[in-house]
Image (cartoon, rainbow, N blue to C red; front, side, top):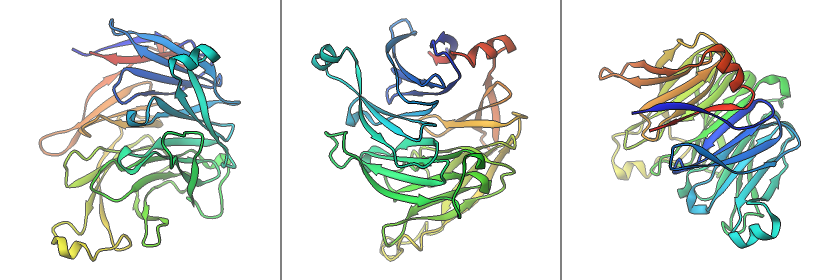
Amino acid sequence: MQRVSAFNVGHDDLVHDIAYDYYGTRLVTCSSDQRVKVWDADEAGGWVLNDSWKAHDSSVVKVDWAHPEFGHVFASCSFDRTIRVWEEQEQHDQRKTDRKWIERAKLADSKGSVHDIQFAPYHIGLKLASVGADGVMRIYEALDVVNLTQWTLMDDIEIVAGGSKESDGPYCLSWCQSRTEPQMLVVGCGRDHTAKIYRIDAHNKWQPYEVLPGHGDVVTDVAWAPSMGRSFHLIATACKDGHVRIFKLTDENAGMSASALQGVGPTRRRFRVELMADLTEHGAEVWRVEWNVTGTILSSSGDDGHVRLWKASVLNKWRLFGYVGAETADAAQSAHGVVGAASK
């Protein structure tokens, strides 16, 4: 039995993002009040404040947890043009500083607001991708995972030609989670009104390859589905034109023998892109899409004030099968410090 309950996170301004950790027992929230808050699940199904602090000098717009293999670590990004990496301290260190979480690194290479961040799948190392208003995607790596104060800028990739500015719209990104595929990212490209697949070429440089077409406005969010043994990939996009789109990527080299595949370099790798679903039920700008852990259910949220859940039928047609909504008064309260949490 699923239930949805609201709890007051106590932020003094708009809540921009929430993120569960790998196990779903911790939650971090961020807000325009420049603060982040970490919450722990209790036995009654509620959330208890673990710690709260001023994390940035402007609105904090995105947070993301690293894989637990690297410890209790998450990152935050902000309109102040920085990314901060936070780690939970050991008990004896907490007694010294009266703080449970400490800033391990401040990454300040962006020349504009940082819009999105995401840690890479853990099997390729402790990497963090970011993209922001300057139209550049940056990939950092902690080469020594026990020393989170040192992050190396491995790549910076211009997403839109001729540079970018704040008014060109938000940028977004999502990693491919598959262990059997080369490193790949899907990136929402701001004013270009499209999303592109990036992967590493024969010279070890990130390059754009396939395009996800058909968007009528800025792509506000992208989400690469967990593969879970599928022979193809699914990518969802949210767009200001009010549509949620689901794309299918099929490897055009599928079916080749192992010996033949060895001769297919990264520059010759190609995916066939198909639009699987174009979902318009929101009827308003869509801001966020997210897959469940098996990549079988997609959730989306937008300016209509609803979180909608989508699932493919036996005929492989994507249909709305549920939604979570709130009355106008509750929605207004939600924008000023109250979030909803789902639990069993």
